[in-house]
Amino acid sequence: MRSILESLRDKVENGSITIREAAIALHKAGWTNFIDINATNALLFNRERNH
Image (tube, rainbow, N blue to C red; front, side, top):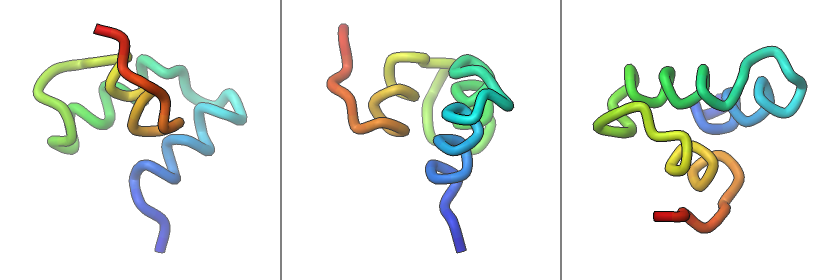
């Protein structure tokens, strides 16, 4: 079974959702305390967070 991160990463990569939509989904799932695009990039693509 794929995780939410894998599913969202695939959807962002193939263009079916935006990174903002992925951030909203992670927020609704309780992964972030607010809609955080930097954290979403870091979680989905293992990128360094820019503060």
